[in-house]
Amino acid sequence: MSAYLLHLAIVGGIYIILAISLNLIIGYAGQVSLGHAAFYGIGAYISALTSLLWHFPFPLAALSAILFAGICGLLLGLPTLRLKEDYLAIVTLGFGVIVDMVFLNLEITGGPDGLPGIPKPSFLGFSFRSPGLYLFLTLLAVLLTLALTYRLVHSYHGRALRAIRDHEVTAQVMGINTPAYKVAIFTLAAALAGLAGSLYAHYITFINPESFGLHTSILILCMVVLGGMGSLLGAVVGALALTVLPELLRQFKAYQDLAYGALLIGLLIWRPQGLLGSGKLSLKFLERKG
Amino acid sequence: MSLLEIHNLTKYFGGVKAVDGVSFTVHQGEIAGLIGPNGAGKTTCFNLISGLLPPTGGAVTLLGEDLGGLAPYYRSRRGLARTFQNIQLFGGMTVLENILTGCHQRQEVGVLRALWPGGVVRRAEARARERALELLDLVGLAGKEDFPAEALAYGEQRRLEIARALAQEPRLLLLDEPAAGLNSRETEELMALLEALRDRGLTLFIIEHDMTLIMGLCHRVVVLDHGQVIAAGPPQEIRRNPLVIEAYLGREEEDGDL
Ligand SMILES: Nc1ncnc2c1ncn2[C@@H]1O[C@H](COP(=O)(O)OP(=O)(O)OP(=O)(O)O)[C@@H](O)[C@H]1O
Ligand SMILES: [Mg+2]
Image (cartoon, rainbow over all chains, first blue to last red; front, side, top):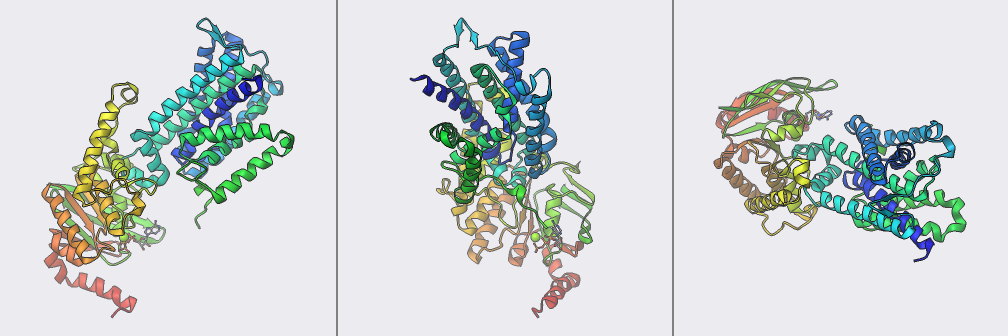
C-alpha cells in the first residue's frame, strides 16, 4: 500500500470511530448533537498532554482521553438531556465553540500554535512508528468500537434507544428510563470520540484547535447523515466516503464546507434516512408549537 | 382490596379545569369503567395516573404507595401499564420488537453483568421473545411478528398495543378507548380478550364510549363531566342516573344532534 493510501486508511478509521459514536446519539437515540468534535478534541489534547507532561505510555494516555472525554460528556449530558431536545442542539453547539476557545486560549494547550512533538505510540515492545503498524492499531480500535456498539445496539438496549427515538413518551410508559439512557449513550459516544482523538493526536503528532472546530462537527454529522441514521455499516460507509471524496476533489478545497452544507441539506430533503439508515435526523428541535 | 386510589386529583390547563377534584378507587381484580362526554377529562385522568402530566393537585396511590412525582418508567415498574387513545406504536419497529419494548424492565441487568460473557443478556432476550410470541398469540396476531408495526390493520394495531402493555406484566392496565374504530365483531373479540385477562387476575380500567362494552364488562363505572365525577356505581345504576343522562344528552343538544 502506498503511503498515501495508508494515510487515508488511518484517517478513515479514525473518522469511522467518530461517525459510529455520533450515530449512537443521533441515529439510535434520536438526539441532536452539533458539537461532537469537541470530545474528539478533548481526547486528542488529553492524550497529547498526558504523554508530553507525564510521559504516559500510549495505552494509558488513550485511556485517560477516553475517560476524560466521557466524563465531559456525562457532565454536559446530565443537565441538558433531561430537558427537551431543542436544548441539546443548542448546548452542544455552544459547547463545541467554548471548547474550541479553551484550546485556543489556554497556555497548556499551546494556544493557536497547538502541541507539537506528540510521541508515536510504543508499547508491549512494539513501536507504532511506521504507518503500517499504526493502521493496525487504528483497525484494532475500529474493530473494538464496532464490536462494542454492535453488541449494544443489537441488545435490548438498542431497542430501548430506538423506542426513545421513535416516541420518547411511549418509551417511558414502557418502563424505559429515557433520561438515563440518553445520558449513558451520550457519555459513551463522547468517550469513543475521545479514543478517536487520542488515535489522531499520536498519529499526526501535532495538534492545534483547527482540527476540532465546528466544521469537523459538521463533517462527522455529514458522515452519519450520508451513511444512514441508526446503521453501523452506514456510519462506516459515510465516514469512508467523506474521507476519500474530498481527496479526489482536492482542487475544490475552498468550497469544501459549502459542499458539506449542500450535501446535508440535500440529504435531509431527498433522503433523510441516508444511504443505509432507518431513522431520520430529528428536526423536532426546529419545530415550534404555537 | 383497593388497588388504585385517586384522591382529589386536579389538573388545570391555564383556565381549563380538565380534571377538577376527582376521587375514586379501583379495586383489585375488577374491570372498572371511566366514561363521560368528549372533553370530560378522561384521557387527562389517565395521563395523570400514568405520570405523563404533573397534577395541579391531589394524589394517586397504587397499592397504598403514593405515586406523586414518580416518572412514568417508575410507575411501570410498580405495575401500571396503559394504551393510548390515538395508537402509539413504535413505527420503526416490527410487531415483535414493539412487544419486546414492553419486556424491557424484566430484561434489565447491571452493566457489568451485561458485559460479562456468558449469555445473561442472551438468555433474558430468549425468554422475552418467547413471552412476546405467547402474547401475540393471545391477542390473535400469531404469525405477524415480523411485520412492520405500521403495516398492521387498525384493529390489529389496537391489539398489538394491548399486547405490548401486557408484556410489562402489569397489575393494572389502563385502556383508553380500546374499541374506538373497531367493528362490532372486533369489539366482541376485544371484550372476550379483556374478560380473559380479568380471569387471569389482571385489574382493568377502561375509558370507552362504546356502551355495549362498558355495560357488558364493567363491574363499576365512574362518570366524568367537565372534569368532575358526577356518578359512580354499577353500570345498571349509571345508565338510569338522571345526571348521567343529562350530561350526555345535554352535550348532544349543544352539538345539535337531537
Ligand atoms: N395538553 C393539554 N393542553 C391543554 N388543554 C388540554 C390538554 N389536554 C387536554 N386538554 C383539555 O382538557 C379537557 C379534557 O380533555 P381530555 O382529553 O382529557 O378529554 P376526554 O374526556 O379524554 O375526551 P375524549 O372523549 O374526546 O377523548 C379538554 O377541554 C381538552 O381540550
Ligand atoms: Mg380521551
